[in-house]
Amino acid sequence: MLKQEIDATNKGTYDFLYLPCNVARKRNFGYAFVNFSDVGFAITFAEKFIGKRWNRFNSDKRCSLSYANIQGKVALIEKYRNSTVMQQDESCRPKLFYTSGPRIGQEEPFPIPVTMLMLF
Image 1: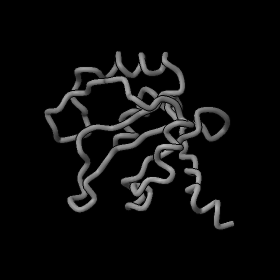
Image 2: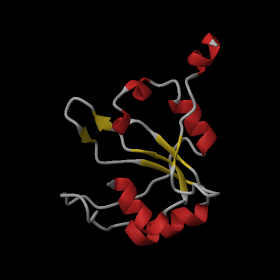
Image 3: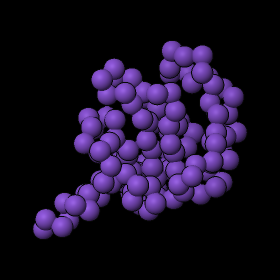
Image 4: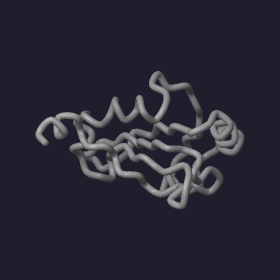
């Protein structure tokens, strides 16, 4: 649902989305990480969502935006590809998305863990 909400105004403008979850409770923690492929897309997102409630969610929380310590698709892949979070239910894993070409906005496969590469 979060992806659908973001895609209403920003489809194809982000290449990484991660909604951390409490797997045991099957609930998210109320925040997400989004990596926009260009700073202009982050500004468009901010203008549309900052300070507003999420229409699709039964919550009084309002959207806020902050700068992340890890920036860029490559750095985010390196952070998460070997993480135990990639062993959780697929709905709780970070997702990658195409930002150009005919598959724009569709999910892109996450690279396999480095440890798996060593086995081949």
